[in-house]
Length: 454
Image 1 (tube, rainbow, N blue to C red):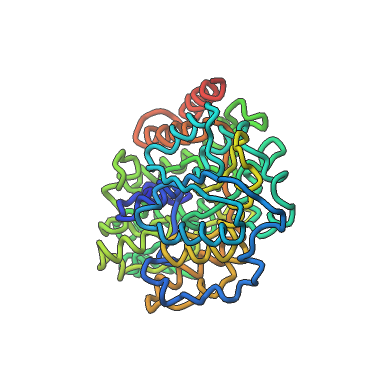
Image 2: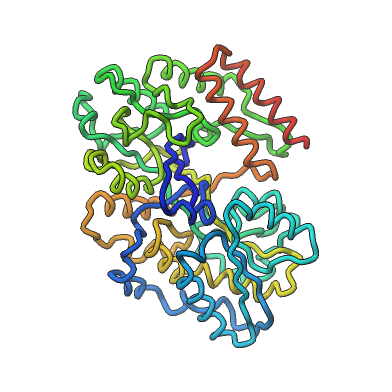
Protein backbone atom coordinates (compact mmCIF):
# COMPACT_ATOMS: atom_id res chain seq x y z
CA UNK A 1 0.00 0.00 0.00
CA UNK A 2 1.31 3.41 -0.81
CA UNK A 3 2.16 5.89 1.83
CA UNK A 4 -0.58 8.35 2.59
CA UNK A 5 0.15 11.77 1.26
CA UNK A 6 -2.21 14.67 1.61
CA UNK A 7 -3.65 15.75 -1.71
CA UNK A 8 -2.25 19.12 -0.82
CA UNK A 9 1.19 17.71 -1.38
CA UNK A 10 2.28 17.62 2.22
CA UNK A 11 5.06 15.40 3.40
CA UNK A 12 3.11 13.42 5.95
CA UNK A 13 3.96 10.04 4.51
CA UNK A 14 3.70 7.28 7.01
CA UNK A 15 4.65 3.63 6.88
CA UNK A 16 1.61 1.43 7.33
CA UNK A 17 1.16 -2.30 7.47
CA UNK A 18 -1.40 -2.20 4.72
CA UNK A 19 0.74 -0.06 2.41
CA UNK A 20 0.42 -2.76 -0.22
CA UNK A 21 -3.18 -2.03 -1.08
CA UNK A 22 -2.87 1.51 -2.25
CA UNK A 23 0.57 1.55 -3.81
CA UNK A 24 -0.32 -1.45 -5.34
CA UNK A 25 -3.74 -0.66 -5.03
CA UNK A 26 -3.49 2.74 -3.99
CA UNK A 27 -2.74 5.96 -4.58
CA UNK A 28 -1.10 8.10 -3.54
CA UNK A 29 -1.03 8.30 -4.88
CA UNK A 30 -3.50 7.47 -3.73
CA UNK A 31 -3.72 9.24 -1.38
CA UNK A 32 -5.74 7.18 0.89
CA UNK A 33 -8.69 6.65 3.10
CA UNK A 34 -9.42 6.08 6.74
CA UNK A 35 -10.88 3.62 9.08
CA UNK A 36 -14.04 4.65 7.40
CA UNK A 37 -13.60 1.32 5.81
CA UNK A 38 -11.48 -0.25 8.46
CA UNK A 39 -10.76 -3.96 8.49
CA UNK A 40 -12.81 -5.88 10.97
CA UNK A 41 -16.01 -3.98 10.24
CA UNK A 42 -17.26 -6.14 7.41
CA UNK A 43 -19.18 -8.48 9.68
CA UNK A 44 -20.81 -5.75 11.67
CA UNK A 45 -21.81 -3.89 8.55
CA UNK A 46 -22.64 -6.83 6.41
CA UNK A 47 -26.06 -5.58 5.48
CA UNK A 48 -25.30 -1.92 5.17
CA UNK A 49 -25.49 -1.82 1.40
CA UNK A 50 -29.08 -3.00 1.47
CA UNK A 51 -30.19 0.49 0.52
CA UNK A 52 -28.61 0.09 -2.88
CA UNK A 53 -31.16 -0.66 -5.54
CA UNK A 54 -31.03 -4.10 -7.15
CA UNK A 55 -29.81 -2.48 -10.34
CA UNK A 56 -26.74 -1.24 -8.51
CA UNK A 57 -25.49 -4.79 -8.30
CA UNK A 58 -26.63 -5.76 -11.75
CA UNK A 59 -24.32 -6.30 -14.66
CA UNK A 60 -23.96 -3.37 -17.02
CA UNK A 61 -26.16 -4.45 -19.91
CA UNK A 62 -28.31 -7.25 -21.21
CA UNK A 63 -25.94 -7.87 -24.10
CA UNK A 64 -24.75 -11.47 -24.25
CA UNK A 65 -21.00 -11.56 -23.74
CA UNK A 66 -18.64 -14.50 -23.91
CA UNK A 67 -14.94 -15.35 -23.85
CA UNK A 68 -11.98 -15.07 -21.50
CA UNK A 69 -11.07 -11.84 -19.71
CA UNK A 70 -7.55 -11.56 -18.29
CA UNK A 71 -7.89 -9.26 -15.28
CA UNK A 72 -4.88 -7.61 -13.62
CA UNK A 73 -4.93 -6.09 -10.14
CA UNK A 74 -2.18 -4.67 -7.95
CA UNK A 75 -1.25 -6.38 -4.66
CA UNK A 76 -4.74 -7.57 -3.76
CA UNK A 77 -4.54 -11.34 -3.73
CA UNK A 78 -2.77 -11.88 -0.41
CA UNK A 79 -5.34 -10.05 1.72
CA UNK A 80 -8.39 -9.47 -0.48
CA UNK A 81 -8.63 -12.73 -2.40
CA UNK A 82 -12.08 -13.59 -1.04
CA UNK A 83 -13.47 -10.23 -2.09
CA UNK A 84 -12.07 -10.37 -5.64
CA UNK A 85 -12.91 -14.03 -6.24
CA UNK A 86 -16.41 -13.39 -4.91
CA UNK A 87 -16.96 -10.68 -7.51
CA UNK A 88 -15.52 -12.88 -10.23
CA UNK A 89 -17.80 -15.77 -9.32
CA UNK A 90 -20.85 -13.52 -9.27
CA UNK A 91 -20.01 -12.06 -12.67
CA UNK A 92 -19.29 -15.46 -14.20
CA UNK A 93 -22.58 -16.80 -12.83
CA UNK A 94 -24.46 -13.95 -14.47
CA UNK A 95 -22.49 -14.48 -17.70
CA UNK A 96 -21.94 -18.25 -18.12
CA UNK A 97 -20.01 -17.71 -21.32
CA UNK A 98 -17.34 -15.55 -19.65
CA UNK A 99 -14.25 -16.77 -17.80
CA UNK A 100 -12.25 -14.27 -15.71
CA UNK A 101 -8.55 -15.09 -15.38
CA UNK A 102 -7.28 -13.06 -12.41
CA UNK A 103 -3.59 -12.08 -12.28
CA UNK A 104 -2.29 -10.11 -9.29
CA UNK A 105 0.81 -8.00 -10.04
CA UNK A 106 3.27 -6.70 -7.39
CA UNK A 107 3.04 -2.94 -6.94
CA UNK A 108 6.68 -2.34 -7.85
CA UNK A 109 6.22 -4.19 -11.15
CA UNK A 110 2.88 -2.98 -12.46
CA UNK A 111 4.07 0.06 -14.42
CA UNK A 112 6.83 -1.74 -16.29
CA UNK A 113 4.77 -4.88 -16.85
CA UNK A 114 1.77 -3.00 -18.13
CA UNK A 115 3.76 -0.79 -20.50
CA UNK A 116 5.62 -3.84 -21.80
CA UNK A 117 2.30 -5.60 -22.41
CA UNK A 118 0.98 -2.61 -24.35
CA UNK A 119 4.05 -2.73 -26.56
CA UNK A 120 3.45 -6.40 -27.32
CA UNK A 121 0.60 -8.29 -28.95
CA UNK A 122 -0.29 -10.01 -25.69
CA UNK A 123 -2.22 -7.60 -23.51
CA UNK A 124 -4.51 -8.23 -20.55
CA UNK A 125 -8.15 -7.33 -21.08
CA UNK A 126 -9.12 -5.48 -17.89
CA UNK A 127 -6.40 -3.75 -15.90
CA UNK A 128 -6.12 -1.86 -12.63
CA UNK A 129 -3.57 0.94 -13.05
CA UNK A 130 -2.88 4.09 -11.07
CA UNK A 131 -4.07 7.44 -12.34
CA UNK A 132 -0.56 8.54 -13.26
CA UNK A 133 -0.32 5.90 -16.01
CA UNK A 134 -3.56 6.69 -17.80
CA UNK A 135 -2.67 9.79 -19.83
CA UNK A 136 0.60 8.39 -21.12
CA UNK A 137 -1.04 5.11 -22.14
CA UNK A 138 -4.27 6.63 -23.46
CA UNK A 139 -3.32 6.09 -27.09
CA UNK A 140 -3.35 2.34 -26.49
CA UNK A 141 -6.49 2.19 -24.37
CA UNK A 142 -10.02 1.46 -25.55
CA UNK A 143 -12.68 4.15 -25.54
CA UNK A 144 -14.98 2.88 -22.81
CA UNK A 145 -17.62 5.30 -24.07
CA UNK A 146 -18.06 3.04 -27.10
CA UNK A 147 -18.03 -0.18 -25.07
CA UNK A 148 -20.54 0.73 -22.35
CA UNK A 149 -23.99 2.34 -22.56
CA UNK A 150 -23.94 6.05 -21.81
CA UNK A 151 -26.13 5.65 -18.72
CA UNK A 152 -23.50 3.43 -17.11
CA UNK A 153 -21.30 6.49 -16.49
CA UNK A 154 -23.91 8.50 -14.59
CA UNK A 155 -23.07 7.02 -11.18
CA UNK A 156 -19.41 8.06 -11.06
CA UNK A 157 -18.39 11.27 -9.32
CA UNK A 158 -17.99 13.65 -12.29
CA UNK A 159 -14.73 15.10 -10.97
CA UNK A 160 -13.28 11.60 -10.83
CA UNK A 161 -14.61 10.38 -14.17
CA UNK A 162 -14.27 13.34 -16.52
CA UNK A 163 -10.49 13.87 -16.14
CA UNK A 164 -10.00 10.45 -17.72
CA UNK A 165 -11.72 11.55 -20.90
CA UNK A 166 -8.65 12.15 -23.01
CA UNK A 167 -8.67 13.32 -26.62
CA UNK A 168 -12.39 12.68 -26.81
CA UNK A 169 -12.39 9.14 -25.44
CA UNK A 170 -13.09 7.71 -22.01
CA UNK A 171 -9.73 6.07 -21.39
CA UNK A 172 -10.42 4.88 -17.83
CA UNK A 173 -13.05 4.70 -15.14
CA UNK A 174 -12.29 5.54 -11.51
CA UNK A 175 -12.26 2.81 -8.86
CA UNK A 176 -11.14 3.80 -5.37
CA UNK A 177 -8.95 6.34 -3.59
CA UNK A 178 -7.99 7.67 -0.17
CA UNK A 179 -10.47 10.48 0.16
CA UNK A 180 -10.23 14.24 0.25
CA UNK A 181 -7.86 15.92 2.71
CA UNK A 182 -8.76 16.76 6.30
CA UNK A 183 -7.17 19.13 8.82
CA UNK A 184 -5.82 17.33 11.88
CA UNK A 185 -5.24 19.63 14.86
CA UNK A 186 -3.42 18.95 18.14
CA UNK A 187 -5.90 20.13 20.74
CA UNK A 188 -3.19 20.75 23.34
CA UNK A 189 -1.50 23.24 21.01
CA UNK A 190 -4.57 24.94 19.59
CA UNK A 191 -5.93 25.59 23.10
CA UNK A 192 -3.06 28.08 23.50
CA UNK A 193 -3.85 29.97 20.28
CA UNK A 194 -6.01 32.94 21.23
CA UNK A 195 -9.28 33.15 19.37
CA UNK A 196 -8.90 29.92 17.41
CA UNK A 197 -12.19 28.22 16.58
CA UNK A 198 -12.32 24.80 14.91
CA UNK A 199 -15.58 25.84 13.25
CA UNK A 200 -13.70 28.68 11.57
CA UNK A 201 -10.64 26.72 10.48
CA UNK A 202 -8.80 27.90 7.33
CA UNK A 203 -10.86 27.96 4.15
CA UNK A 204 -7.92 28.51 1.80
CA UNK A 205 -4.16 28.09 1.87
CA UNK A 206 -3.47 31.74 2.56
CA UNK A 207 -5.33 31.28 5.82
CA UNK A 208 -3.38 28.06 6.42
CA UNK A 209 -0.14 30.03 6.33
CA UNK A 210 -1.56 32.71 8.61
CA UNK A 211 -2.59 30.10 11.16
CA UNK A 212 0.74 28.27 10.93
CA UNK A 213 2.61 31.45 11.75
CA UNK A 214 0.19 32.39 14.52
CA UNK A 215 0.75 29.00 16.14
CA UNK A 216 4.51 29.39 16.18
CA UNK A 217 4.41 33.01 17.33
CA UNK A 218 2.05 32.08 20.17
CA UNK A 219 3.33 28.68 21.28
CA UNK A 220 6.78 28.21 19.71
CA UNK A 221 5.45 24.96 18.26
CA UNK A 222 5.90 24.78 14.48
CA UNK A 223 2.62 25.42 12.72
CA UNK A 224 2.74 22.60 10.19
CA UNK A 225 4.92 20.70 7.74
CA UNK A 226 4.23 21.76 4.17
CA UNK A 227 5.70 22.94 0.87
CA UNK A 228 4.06 24.86 -2.00
CA UNK A 229 3.70 21.65 -3.99
CA UNK A 230 2.18 21.53 -7.44
CA UNK A 231 -1.18 20.56 -5.92
CA UNK A 232 -1.01 23.35 -3.33
CA UNK A 233 -0.28 25.80 -6.14
CA UNK A 234 -3.44 24.68 -7.88
CA UNK A 235 -5.37 25.33 -4.66
CA UNK A 236 -4.02 28.88 -4.95
CA UNK A 237 -5.44 29.04 -8.48
CA UNK A 238 -2.10 28.81 -10.31
CA UNK A 239 -2.23 27.37 -13.83
CA UNK A 240 0.63 24.89 -13.93
CA UNK A 241 0.72 23.83 -17.59
CA UNK A 242 -0.21 25.43 -20.91
CA UNK A 243 -3.45 24.45 -22.63
CA UNK A 244 -1.53 22.58 -25.33
CA UNK A 245 0.43 20.72 -22.60
CA UNK A 246 3.73 21.66 -24.25
CA UNK A 247 5.14 24.08 -21.68
CA UNK A 248 5.05 25.18 -18.07
CA UNK A 249 2.68 28.04 -17.23
CA UNK A 250 3.58 28.75 -13.61
CA UNK A 251 6.54 31.11 -14.03
CA UNK A 252 4.57 34.28 -13.30
CA UNK A 253 4.82 37.17 -10.85
CA UNK A 254 1.66 35.96 -9.14
CA UNK A 255 3.08 32.47 -8.54
CA UNK A 256 6.38 33.95 -7.39
CA UNK A 257 4.53 35.99 -4.77
CA UNK A 258 2.82 32.82 -3.52
CA UNK A 259 5.97 30.79 -3.07
CA UNK A 260 7.74 33.78 -1.51
CA UNK A 261 5.08 33.79 1.17
CA UNK A 262 5.75 30.11 1.88
CA UNK A 263 9.45 30.85 2.16
CA UNK A 264 8.81 33.73 4.54
CA UNK A 265 6.67 31.45 6.71
CA UNK A 266 9.34 28.74 6.56
CA UNK A 267 12.05 31.18 7.65
CA UNK A 268 9.85 32.43 10.48
CA UNK A 269 9.20 28.81 11.58
CA UNK A 270 5.50 28.75 10.87
CA UNK A 271 6.46 25.90 8.52
CA UNK A 272 8.63 23.30 10.22
CA UNK A 273 12.22 22.64 9.05
CA UNK A 274 11.10 19.10 8.24
CA UNK A 275 9.11 20.49 5.33
CA UNK A 276 12.23 20.20 3.18
CA UNK A 277 13.24 16.75 4.47
CA UNK A 278 13.94 14.02 1.96
CA UNK A 279 12.73 11.40 4.42
CA UNK A 280 9.38 9.72 3.94
CA UNK A 281 8.31 10.93 7.36
CA UNK A 282 9.47 14.46 8.23
CA UNK A 283 11.16 14.75 11.63
CA UNK A 284 8.47 17.23 12.64
CA UNK A 285 5.16 15.51 12.17
CA UNK A 286 1.83 15.12 13.93
CA UNK A 287 2.82 12.02 15.92
CA UNK A 288 6.00 13.62 17.25
CA UNK A 289 4.12 16.49 18.87
CA UNK A 290 6.25 19.09 17.11
CA UNK A 291 3.61 20.68 14.87
CA UNK A 292 0.22 22.17 15.59
CA UNK A 293 -1.68 20.69 12.65
CA UNK A 294 -1.37 18.76 9.45
CA UNK A 295 -3.47 18.44 6.30
CA UNK A 296 -3.60 14.90 5.03
CA UNK A 297 -5.80 12.01 4.09
CA UNK A 298 -7.71 10.37 6.94
CA UNK A 299 -5.74 7.16 6.68
CA UNK A 300 -3.31 8.56 9.22
CA UNK A 301 -5.92 8.01 11.94
CA UNK A 302 -5.43 4.26 11.75
CA UNK A 303 -1.67 4.74 11.95
CA UNK A 304 -1.81 7.08 14.92
CA UNK A 305 -4.33 4.97 16.80
CA UNK A 306 -1.99 2.01 16.56
CA UNK A 307 1.43 3.63 16.80
CA UNK A 308 0.91 6.93 18.64
CA UNK A 309 -2.21 6.64 20.80
CA UNK A 310 -1.38 9.76 22.81
CA UNK A 311 -1.19 11.80 19.62
CA UNK A 312 -4.43 10.22 18.42
CA UNK A 313 -6.18 11.19 21.66
CA UNK A 314 -4.97 14.78 21.19
CA UNK A 315 -6.57 15.24 17.75
CA UNK A 316 -9.49 17.31 16.56
CA UNK A 317 -10.64 17.42 12.95
CA UNK A 318 -11.92 20.07 10.57
CA UNK A 319 -12.54 20.22 6.81
CA UNK A 320 -9.50 21.09 4.74
CA UNK A 321 -9.35 24.21 2.55
CA UNK A 322 -10.87 24.08 -0.92
CA UNK A 323 -10.16 25.74 -4.23
CA UNK A 324 -11.97 28.98 -5.00
CA UNK A 325 -14.59 26.83 -6.76
CA UNK A 326 -15.20 24.84 -3.59
CA UNK A 327 -13.43 21.69 -4.74
CA UNK A 328 -11.13 19.29 -2.93
CA UNK A 329 -8.28 18.09 -5.12
CA UNK A 330 -7.40 14.43 -5.34
CA UNK A 331 -4.03 13.58 -6.85
CA UNK A 332 -4.11 9.82 -6.39
CA UNK A 333 -6.62 7.24 -7.55
CA UNK A 334 -6.93 3.67 -8.75
CA UNK A 335 -8.52 3.21 -12.15
CA UNK A 336 -9.62 0.40 -14.46
CA UNK A 337 -8.89 0.33 -18.18
CA UNK A 338 -9.31 -1.91 -21.22
CA UNK A 339 -6.30 -1.92 -23.57
CA UNK A 340 -7.20 -1.39 -27.22
CA UNK A 341 -5.37 -4.64 -28.01
CA UNK A 342 -7.78 -6.65 -25.85
CA UNK A 343 -9.14 -9.76 -27.51
CA UNK A 344 -12.41 -9.41 -25.61
CA UNK A 345 -13.10 -5.69 -25.01
CA UNK A 346 -16.89 -5.96 -24.63
CA UNK A 347 -16.67 -8.51 -21.80
CA UNK A 348 -13.73 -6.66 -20.23
CA UNK A 349 -15.63 -3.36 -20.18
CA UNK A 350 -18.72 -5.03 -18.73
CA UNK A 351 -16.59 -6.61 -16.01
CA UNK A 352 -14.81 -3.44 -14.91
CA UNK A 353 -18.13 -1.62 -14.77
CA UNK A 354 -19.41 -4.45 -12.56
CA UNK A 355 -16.34 -4.21 -10.30
CA UNK A 356 -16.98 -0.49 -9.82
CA UNK A 357 -20.74 -0.61 -9.26
CA UNK A 358 -22.05 0.86 -6.01
CA UNK A 359 -22.57 -2.41 -4.17
CA UNK A 360 -19.11 -3.75 -4.92
CA UNK A 361 -17.44 -0.47 -4.01
CA UNK A 362 -19.22 -0.30 -0.65
CA UNK A 363 -18.28 -3.91 0.06
CA UNK A 364 -14.63 -3.08 -0.61
CA UNK A 365 -14.79 -0.04 1.66
CA UNK A 366 -15.91 -2.31 4.49
CA UNK A 367 -12.64 -4.21 4.21
CA UNK A 368 -10.02 -1.48 3.93
CA UNK A 369 -9.70 2.30 4.50
CA UNK A 370 -10.58 3.49 1.02
CA UNK A 371 -13.36 5.57 -0.52
CA UNK A 372 -15.56 4.99 -3.57
CA UNK A 373 -15.98 6.77 -6.87
CA UNK A 374 -19.68 5.89 -7.06
CA UNK A 375 -22.28 8.47 -6.04
CA UNK A 376 -24.69 5.74 -4.93
CA UNK A 377 -21.96 4.16 -2.83
CA UNK A 378 -21.26 7.46 -1.10
CA UNK A 379 -24.94 7.67 -0.13
CA UNK A 380 -24.88 4.24 1.49
CA UNK A 381 -25.70 4.16 5.25
CA UNK A 382 -22.32 2.57 5.90
CA UNK A 383 -20.65 5.97 5.72
CA UNK A 384 -22.80 7.27 8.57
CA UNK A 385 -22.73 4.20 10.79
CA UNK A 386 -21.13 4.63 14.19
CA UNK A 387 -18.17 2.44 15.07
CA UNK A 388 -17.68 3.51 18.67
CA UNK A 389 -14.73 5.71 17.72
CA UNK A 390 -16.03 9.31 17.47
CA UNK A 391 -12.91 10.64 15.74
CA UNK A 392 -12.97 7.95 13.06
CA UNK A 393 -16.71 8.34 12.59
CA UNK A 394 -16.37 12.09 12.17
CA UNK A 395 -13.66 11.69 9.54
CA UNK A 396 -15.61 9.02 7.70
CA UNK A 397 -18.74 11.13 7.44
CA UNK A 398 -16.73 14.24 6.58
CA UNK A 399 -15.03 12.52 3.67
CA UNK A 400 -18.29 11.06 2.36
CA UNK A 401 -19.87 14.52 2.46
CA UNK A 402 -16.94 16.00 0.54
CA UNK A 403 -16.72 13.33 -2.16
CA UNK A 404 -19.17 14.87 -4.66
CA UNK A 405 -16.96 17.98 -4.63
CA UNK A 406 -13.72 16.03 -4.95
CA UNK A 407 -11.89 16.34 -8.25
CA UNK A 408 -8.99 14.35 -9.59
CA UNK A 409 -6.28 16.64 -10.97
CA UNK A 410 -4.01 15.70 -13.82
CA UNK A 411 -1.72 17.37 -16.31
CA UNK A 412 -2.82 14.85 -18.92
CA UNK A 413 0.66 13.99 -20.14
CA UNK A 414 2.78 10.86 -20.10
CA UNK A 415 5.19 12.75 -17.85
CA UNK A 416 2.81 13.62 -15.00
CA UNK A 417 4.75 11.80 -12.28
CA UNK A 418 8.06 13.32 -13.37
CA UNK A 419 6.61 16.82 -13.56
CA UNK A 420 5.24 16.55 -10.04
CA UNK A 421 8.49 15.17 -8.66
CA UNK A 422 10.63 17.86 -10.31
CA UNK A 423 8.41 20.70 -9.12
CA UNK A 424 8.07 19.47 -5.56
CA UNK A 425 11.77 18.76 -5.16
CA UNK A 426 12.43 22.20 -6.58
CA UNK A 427 10.17 23.76 -3.97
CA UNK A 428 11.99 21.98 -1.15
CA UNK A 429 15.27 23.32 -2.48
CA UNK A 430 13.79 26.80 -2.82
CA UNK A 431 12.51 26.93 0.75
CA UNK A 432 15.86 25.92 2.15
CA UNK A 433 18.04 27.77 -0.33
CA UNK A 434 19.04 31.27 -1.40
CA UNK A 435 17.44 31.56 -4.86
CA UNK A 436 14.71 34.15 -5.19
CA UNK A 437 11.19 33.15 -6.11
CA UNK A 438 11.26 34.40 -9.70
CA UNK A 439 14.52 32.61 -10.49
CA UNK A 440 13.37 29.39 -8.82
CA UNK A 441 10.19 29.24 -10.88
CA UNK A 442 12.01 30.15 -14.09
CA UNK A 443 14.48 27.33 -13.53
CA UNK A 444 11.71 24.82 -12.86
CA UNK A 445 9.78 26.01 -15.90
CA UNK A 446 12.81 25.29 -18.11
CA UNK A 447 13.05 21.79 -16.63
CA UNK A 448 9.38 21.17 -17.30
CA UNK A 449 9.68 22.42 -20.87
CA UNK A 450 12.54 19.99 -21.48
CA UNK A 451 10.56 17.10 -20.00
CA UNK A 452 7.45 17.97 -22.03
CA UNK A 453 9.48 18.14 -25.22
CA UNK A 454 10.70 14.57 -24.68
